Amino acid sequence: MKVNFLTFFWGKKYTPAHVDILFRALTEYCDFPFNFYLLTNRVLKIDHRIKQLKLWDDYSTERKCWRRLRAFSYKTMSFLPHYFAIDLDVVLFPGFPELVKDTYANDFTLCRAENPVYPDSLYSGTMWQVGNLEAVDRLIWQEFQKLMALPENNPITNLAKNLKSKGFDGTDSALFSYLFKDKVIQNIGSKDGIYSYPMKIVAEGLTEPPPDTRIILFHGSGNDYLKIEMAQRYKFIHDYLKKFNDQKATINEKG
Image (cartoon, rainbow, N blue to C red; front, side, top):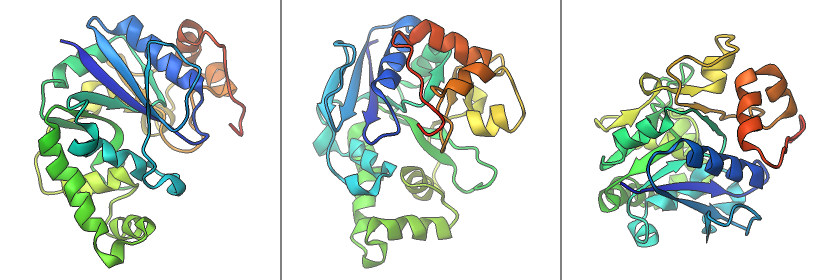
């Protein structure tokens, strides 16, 4: 099995170090061959083995994750019809490859949000898997186009407001939750060792992740694991950066 990993880079939230750290962690932990694709709006000085591809301009002025949705378009992504998408703001653990192997043969897999504040927002855009791109195009991309054809959803900020009024928080994650609210789809979450930094580590006052952790998601404002104080506060982050951050890059509180 050879896996295609896909991630995205735009704006000022991330640095090239985030990309290299994720690639190094995958290289260290994965016991299977893989390609690593980066959809980016600018060329980065990163590991030459990472395949940099031009990111489309859809919704580039919105500074939101609507921009990722074209990854579900068969016309756009036909060169990569089978992939595992993952955000840059994550910390991987040695068990992560098992999660990938457990899901990679699926037609489609979404990550559960498990946010108690928005119980109807079932899914997160931080990680997903596509095995049948043609089917996913019909389920997500074409349905998104239909929603955007409605005047009440334009501009796209109106779609976000309309989805939130129905209890669906976020951008692409709100869309996933809306589209699949009455459907049964394959999904992954905390039962699979996927934990949210703000909703698990911080909310429960943990200093170390649960023993079954495979990946921690550092989503949300101000939760970047490359902040200096994060490594000072958590030994597992300190050890992760010591192992994978060759640039020794950190960002300050305003980063």
